[in-house]
Length: 604
Image 1 (cartoon, rainbow, N blue to C red):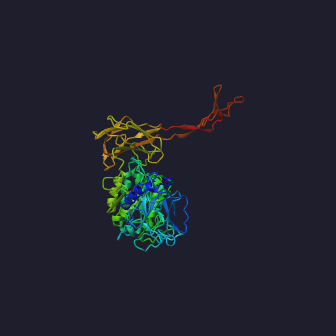
Image 2: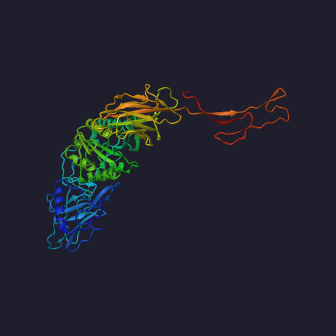
Image 3: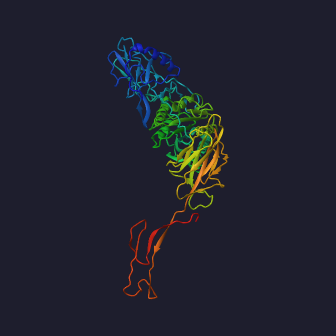
């Protein structure tokens, strides 16, 4: 966040204020740098005098509790004659910058009796956002169904100003609970702006929070919504990815459902199927609360790489306890979603909003933009697109498919699975993802960048690693060989005689494999292909415990005696070491001692 700004002489301000005000009016206001030239907001809201009024606006950034928003410093606001004015009414007292408490205060002179500004009404608009934030000059309002959409300017008139009075955005203007009044600009009274969307880690294999809209408006399209989520999940299978699951209607989780913030590995199809079963029987609720759906993600203990919000409508609720009327979208409903999305982005998580169907078409993109980022999906930019507007859930599934594999072109993922020790031959039924410490080294006979490379599985539960070779411009395909560092007491399990089984993630077709040595394999990797290979190991069968019993017999003058039956004067004692390396201790003859372990022969 930018620190509170120093006062600048008005003569140095005029050009900058006029320019930024003009850009704001066109929706192109730039982010403020570390030292904007507008006058700094004071540390506390200043008191009015008999001849002046104070207009103070609370500015907010991240949601920090269900019904609380943290302050944001460095927000530049202006007082304008009306919504269409390009310049603030005064370059000095008509401009303010919020302080660390989120207070942006204007001291308006001449509002006392007979003063030139007595009874004046000004419009508060944003001039610039702090570095790392962007403005939302307009938001979509109107019926929650998406019909009769409006896009009012995010601006608020002050009351008629009188000397000696302080006017606050959280009580005297801006704030409103009049939810039936068009153009539905009722606000929380906390000025919003959005965090810049963090970039998605350039890795094939990510942690994703999937947030599903289960509002009643989804209606008969619920199976299609689940199918779109299924397609996204299945696409990630074969990559070292994990998914978490959230839902919302008027609350989060949605009525009759449960959030699953703990990541589930989807690196195998079995893992993907297990994740899909979590929402397979979910039903619809009522209302649409982007705020609580996103804030549930922000409150989760896991930091995700990506949050995907799949929604068919604009928000009609916010906060907890619930606010708004549940049938229309107001500034306040979207503000809540913005503050919650900011809290998710603050953790370095990219937010992608996918709007599906008529409920989020047209100017509803303004609200999708506000919770994600300014860049719309154009069909060929899944790596950088912030928000999507698709016609139906089938199209949404296709878009999510592109998003899932956007960082997987030209990569080779290896998923390590451990087969139950009781299996024999090439039977891999019941295989589970390997834990940490399994090492793989990739190399090529071609000059591919970043190879050779060694990767080791970690404890994320995916059992996977990904290699990202750099292809020279003239190389369309190259062989890549992967060698596994075999761990003790494990045996590689072949499939069809091959040391790995590989598929093309783009279309699911098999990729030919050539075995290399006892644990390695080679595949031909295409420049833009995404290939995933599974390698199986079976632990050698565990040792079985054995007991040791020592019997004593005596042979004296050619006669054999059992221990205890020998003639007097003949005695012998027994000591044994163990088990587990214990030192020698006395042991009765003929009594068993757990003496250690004997390893079974492999394959038994």
